[in-house]
Image (cartoon, rainbow, N blue to C red; front, side, top):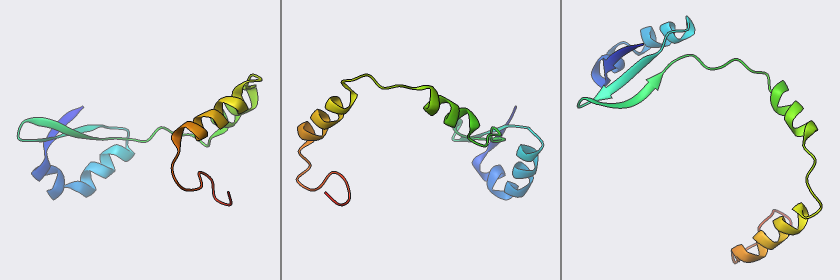
Length: 83
């Protein structure tokens, strides 16, 4: 992982994106402080998330907990579209 200044990152942003596409990561600093990381995105098509949702079974009190949370929030306006 390499470190670049914000100025350097601005001047060579396309090159940083090319590096990220190749799997490399760069830390961007400003005034000597780390402010951002530019790197590759984890590949996913959402299958793991869908599998997790399919495997989760809420307990009997879940709906009651959601309704109690909504009542406690007292937003002064409908909490859900169409309410």
